[in-house]
Image (cartoon, rainbow, N blue to C red; front, side):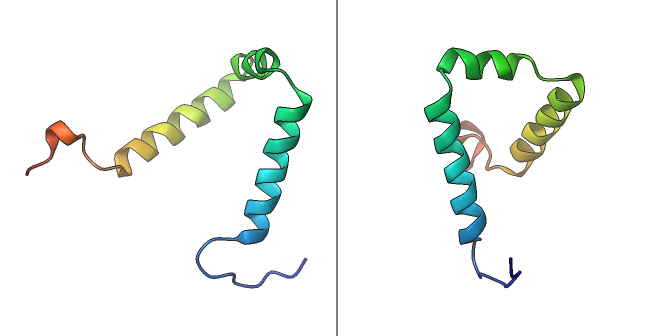
Length: 68
């Protein structure tokens, strides 16, 4: 696959991601997806928590904390 700059966003990566999500939803039940999520390894769990914290740190302050 050719690695060319696609500007704002990456349409090829987006297409692959959406296809993977579609396949997962079609091939599994909600209960099975929940079970898999609960079975994360400690390393996966820590990575998910770190990613969530990083995302929250970059976010806008809560509406109650903003000046009007």
